[in-house]
View 1 (cartoon, rainbow, N blue to C red):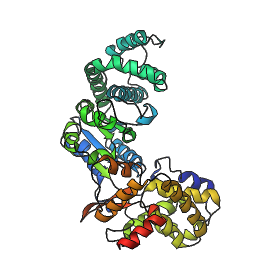
View 2: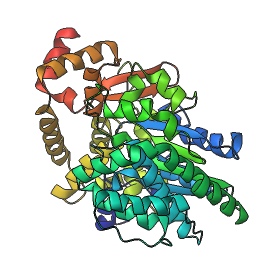
View 3: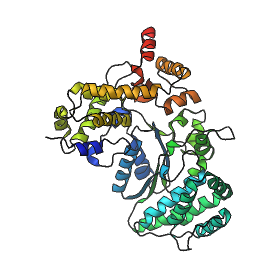
View 4: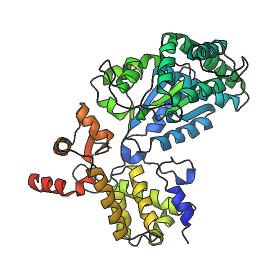
Amino acid sequence: MTLDLPRFYKACNPSKPVQKQQYYIDFSSVRGSKIIKSLKRQIAVISPDEPTCQLFTGHIGCGKSTELLRLKSDLEQEGFHVVYFESSQDLDMADVDVTDILLSIAGQVSESLEAINIRLHPGYFANLFTEIADFLQTPIELSAEAELSLGIGKITARTKEAPKLRRRLREYLEPRTSGILQSINEELLGKANTALKRKGKAGLVVIVDNLDRVDFRPLPSGRSQQEYLFIDRGDQLRKLNCHVVYTIPLGLTFSNDCEILKDRLGGGIPPKVLPMVPVKRRNGEEHTEGMELLRQMIMVRAFPDETPEKALELIPEVFETPETLDRLCSISGGHLRNLLGLLLGCVMQDDPPLSGKNLEEVIRERRDYLLSSIDDDEWDLLFQVMKTQNVRGDMEHNILLRSMFVFEYRDPEEGQWFDINPVLAESPKFKSWWKQNN
């Protein structure tokens, strides 16, 4: 069996979620819970005819988008019309408000419905677009019959790269948030659900990905942008007349307001957290099943047409030794984007079979890159995390999570725990501390 290098290279792209079924690996058995099954049951089994709002979070790059695309596929098999979109394509994550999110959802839903010949023309928005054009004193050419997605798309495109224009628009729209929400629910989502059910669909589901990338930046009020959007304004984001799944920043689950978040946006249900794939246990022993699944994840990208068992037999086609593959999986810490990024770094340097020496060079580059951004105070926090295997809810520890200096794991028996990014654990500073404390 010969390795198709271009296909392998393409399959290892860390910036793209898995969309092909043949590359999908189910990690639910080692992540502590069947999260996607739970999200699906809430929509398809428990409350198919009543709107639901569910929250999903985890480290950026841990595989959320892949799992959400899996949820989309599963719900479509159950007969739902699912609108999945990456909000970062529409929104500036450094400067987002509730009306931005609501308009983005309305535009994406409209575009998806238009693709299956369901065309809705909410009168409220036709008038709103005219008013916006007048208010901004900038031409936005739209006829009264224009598709809703086209109108929202033009406004989004005009304001995304123009912060001053965006702020002016926001000041205009903010007092009209209730009217916008009511129009979306009655003139768009309500009519969409009716039209979809006429076509034999079970209902409408909207999956808003990448909202977990909203910046943590402080606002004049003293709240962070994340707290303002998902906690202070969470009740409005929850009021959409369809099933919604939002990705939210992981740090909010450690906030002092996590209960308010759960109640206002989650409707009493806490966010589902996607942890890392465990490569070791709390006591430091190797996590056999986690490592086995990570090996499969790599080898199925090399030989997607083979069974998992046969693909593992072909390790010598990709790596000089099985130990090189194990080292790659272990040093990733079970962070899937890091795993693929390290692998891609090796492939960019040399042709398979990849050598241990090649891998060590890539690891050193990644380690030095991370080390350059850590100050002494953050090292002290890291050492605290190592002592307690826990993370507090303050801003400093939030930085450790957002910077991916620390990873979260879930153990079915012992629950949540945290560990340092294995790449950092190989630094001289950490080794010196470890020697003194162990």
